[in-house]
Image (cartoon, rainbow over all chains, first blue to last red; front, side, top):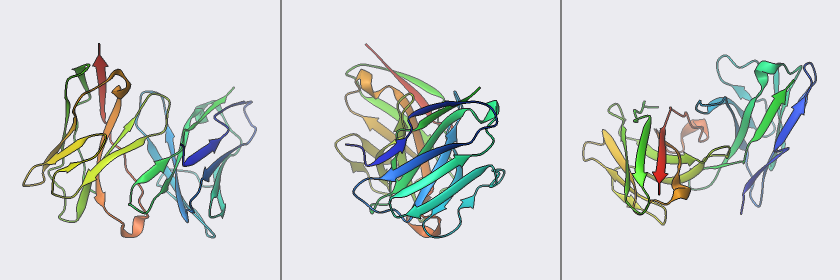
Length: 114
Length: 113
């Protein structure tokens, strides 16, 4: 069964609104989680590292004020896309590391901004 | 982390072995080779990883050359459900990055009946 869940699986919103995506680790704790974005026909692009109890670390070129990350507990990280625009439409995926130094990935959230 | 090079696409007949190559000529001594795959519209899935010895698990085998500059992922009996994009990633195990992965373009494997 899935060990990392995401909610919602897909969301459609109007331009200018904010959207929150949840990433949960099931049956294990994750002090670190990762957020990726994937545009059609492209590879995954790492956006940021979510750190439990501290600020997220953003990759170069990712706007931290637009993509708000909160890692409030050892099993939950949230990504909020603020003032979403059509160009933010994408597939957002989170992951969490496991003790064998590999990653469990969530099923992804497809965001469509109208 | 070292860069990897993979062919953009490959075809394989159902039931036959799929051999996916990956070049990583700048790999460092402490970097592992990881393979993940992504079935369309799903999150990636871990397949296998290794340092220098060949590895095998229930999903696949990983063959790493002696000089570690390249590797091959082998799916021994490909099925239609193995159709996916396969990513080869090299990185230091553990480290201070907490396990983040930098994805290249991968190989799109199409398994045909």
